[in-house]
Image 1 (cartoon, rainbow, N blue to C red):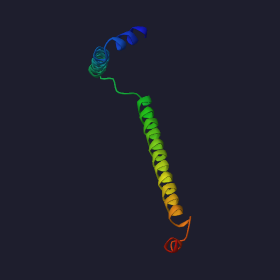
Image 2: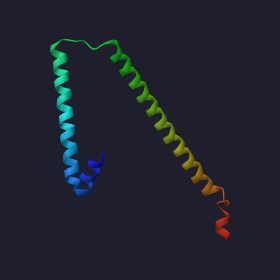
Image 3: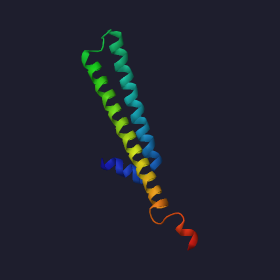
Image 4: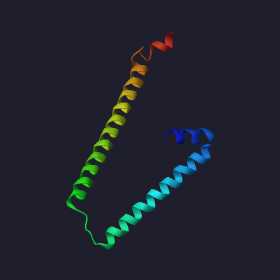
Length: 97
């Protein structure tokens, strides 16, 4: 970890290049493992379906939470705007002032 900090302090370009190479190597290793499994004709197990179902459920929860926050924020802003427009003084009071 200290080596990565030294590389980042020396050059951000070298730091980015190092991470790019590591990511590319990890991608190739994953590709080779997937190809080897495909050659053996190993079907994905039951655990894969449960994992995908769980991830989709989590995604739906996060989406619902995000939309709820956005709706609540919109309603708060609308209520604040209405309170500012009509709550401080009546509309006709500003004409006489």
